[in-house]
Image 1: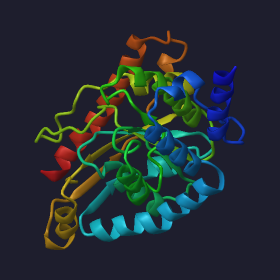
Image 2: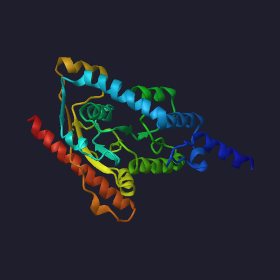
Image 3: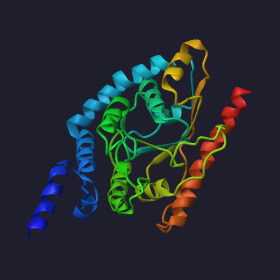
Image 4: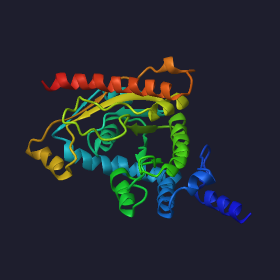
Length: 291
């Protein structure tokens, strides 16, 4: 009885009193270490209600401004009208190649500054560092205005933590199923591609395919090139002649052929592979443009 009371107490602390909100089960939450529980509760709170609206305001008026200042001489954007013309009442997933730490933050700044649609951002992220370290919490605030949510623990080497990822998948499906202005940034490759050739993409991971199959959101491919991981050098390059930054937004991907298919790993991988093929097509356009 005492253990049951403790379980109910733990979940009540992370419950958000908003329509449709969900919480991890007691078994899922229990696998997290104390510091991970604190990190999760903190970031989760920042992604609901008044807090989320406040941080979105900061993203739009502060975050997008400093990224603009750091890239305006280098930035080239193509196909932004595909985002502008998307249905703001229906969640949108942006699927992009992954070359630098700053890919999605740069993409989001462009959307904030070049479209008039409502925007509420979420960036699913590996939990290691961002959820188990106060410095990671600070990075989440400074870089993403707390939008690195929900977290996934599958990469931290502890198999038990994968129990919690079941909640994160459900939460991601929820965010991709409903919510005005919801935009979710996702990298199907699953990790940064360190290959010197920006057009040589990594194989797609199946996770995003499962989310799309269950949530049926709008999906737009994005190809990003010209961003590096050396932040001072990237910023200085804006005035010293650094590599041009190119962001290509494709048309919304028609995935209707997968509707009604079995919710299986094979189907998830087929969807993810389709996404990567569309990203690769945009990469081909970029290759032609820079010649």
